[in-house]
Amino acid sequence: SAGTPQLRKAVAAKLERDNGIKVSPEQVIVSCGAKQSVYNSMQVLLDPGDEVILVAPYWMTYTEQIRLAGGTPVVVHADAADGFLPDYQKIKDAVTPRTKAILINSPSNPTGAVWPRETIKQVAALALRHGLWIVTDEIYEKLIYGGTTHVSIASLSGEVADRTITINGCSKTYSMTGWRIGYAAAPLPVAKAMSNLQDQVTSNPTTFAQMGAIVALQLPSESVESMRSEFEARRDLIVRLLREIPGVSLEAPHGAFYVLPSFAGVLSGKIRTDFDLADYLLEKVHVATIPGAVFEAPGHLRLSYATSRADIERGVARIAEALQQLPT
Ligand code: PLP
Image 1 (cartoon, helix red, strand yellow):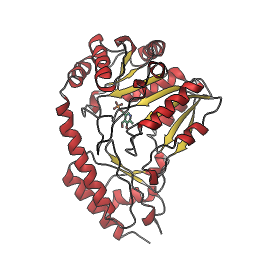
Image 2 (cartoon, helix red, strand yellow; image 1 turned 120 degrees about the horizontal axis):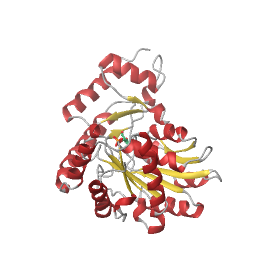
Image 3 (cartoon, protein in one colour; image 1 turned 90 degrees about the vertical axis):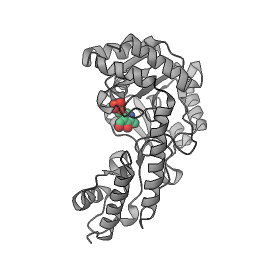
Image 4 (spheres, protein in one colour; image 1 turned 90 degrees about the horizontal axis):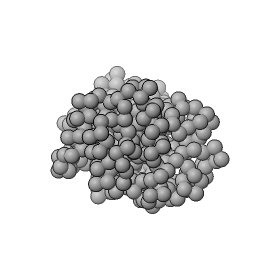
């Protein structure tokens, strides 16, 4: 139920090679997507009333999964002006006697923020000081731009690794979203609990998808690099085009494949909120966006650039055109 021995071995080898994390195959739990790995983590770590600190704007699955496990999300806010980078002081101030874990998602969905090494080190020290767990979702690790580096918190020391669940998967790096293969690496007792839980919920991830994942994890890095560099060109394109629209502002994100621009400068009249604007763009010019409020980023819209440059150009041109005709 925790995955085939071959894939667990391939994941352990990948974590050592790419992330500097030393784990045995027994510490690896393969799941039906990283989403299930996050779910398993919350279910095994949390007791009712336990608090989990996370940084907004966040992937909304996290807060729901924390609640499903009886926990309470404690949200600290990152500022658009800082490129949505987390403020360590706010994380530190959010710790209470009920804090059980800190959740890291770097690079982030929806902001594309990549946490600096210094912040990661500070959070690790904080977790050790208070005996907290660290859950780190690193699914966008390979999609980083502008020479930024990804730091896996579990690589900092054995002590930190003993408090950390590292989550990753094949959906983003290899575009294998529909295959549903994610994984977690955790200290042995936690890994065993996750395996026991999963055994009663979904049994095992699909066997032939696991065989595909073994091949993916062993692909030469150039095969991922060509996709990464194309994403970087798309990021540069979408950021440039959006900045040309009056009333729209954003910092260039350093990872993942989303931008979260502020549209606060155009909200007025009948289009007062990001929800109104997302509906308007969908109906008027058939451009799908996600209202920022669902990530606790009101006034923003999330746009994905996991699409061709031609579609990015067409989509942003349509947004610009629609904004010129906003109903009053
Ligand atoms: N983690 C983050 C931050 C994501 O954005 C997503 C997908 O959108 C996932 C996990 C889900 O990954 P998977 O397809 O492996 O369940």
